[in-house]
Image (cartoon, rainbow, N blue to C red):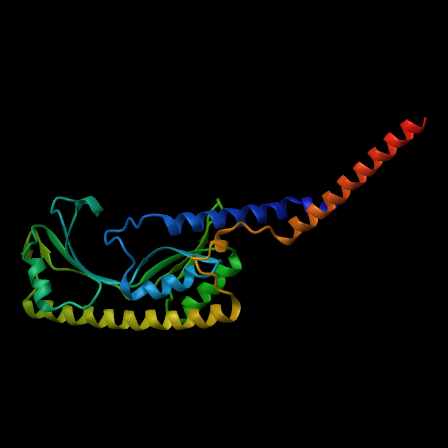
Amino acid sequence: MNPRLRSPGLYYIFKMEKNFCQWKKQSLNKVDLSKKGVVDDDVVHIVSLLNSYEEYFTTSSCSGRIIIIDRAPDSVVVQKKNLVWLLVSHSKCTFDDMMSALASSCGNAVLKFEPFVMHVQCRTLDDAQLLLSAALQSGFKNSGLTASKTGKIITAVRCTHSLEVPLSNQGRLLVSHEYINFLTQIANQKMEDNLRQIERFYQTIQTTLTTNKQPKGPQDSKSHEIKQPPFMDLEKKEQDKDDKFVREAQIKSINTECLA
């Protein structure tokens, strides 16, 4: 048997391939545990596109949102359990939306704009770098990739177009209505820019992946099958040859004994 086919490196690659297919299948079949419970409308097409390729699957995403959160006055550390969500919108807001949300504030209210973010698990480092390049070309300059000890390779698509402004303290409004109206316009402008950037990213990855990859939809049952790399097929052929040689030797030995 060819000793090269038993090298630890080749078996490690096969193991990572197998793990990735299992992770993708589990991820696509699991329940969405986000607050909204479904993928945001403005990024459904991107999620569907990436998941249709066997080299990728999305693990989390947000199309971007305008929020007002209220933190308890006596809370020193910012934690989710200490926050009240006064406003959450994945589209543009009005001045009245802002004022209505602030009317419920009893603590320290903060207006935030959080831009598009997406995390994508990739089969190999080369696949991750290809997606990262598309993200950077689309203007998501804060994007990057990580690789864990378990072999999970994640590309994070992010930008820096965020906004965070304190509006009240212990329920008391700190700024004028005119300033809140100004902030509303700023947040809405950021949302418009954010949506344009999402579309630019979609066009970029569509072109990039069409050129370099072949899509295989999640609805195709074969897309989740564990495929053996070529070296495993070669090894099986070598093993079959060895087995055949042993059987022939055994037959010859039996015939020799009978003749004796």
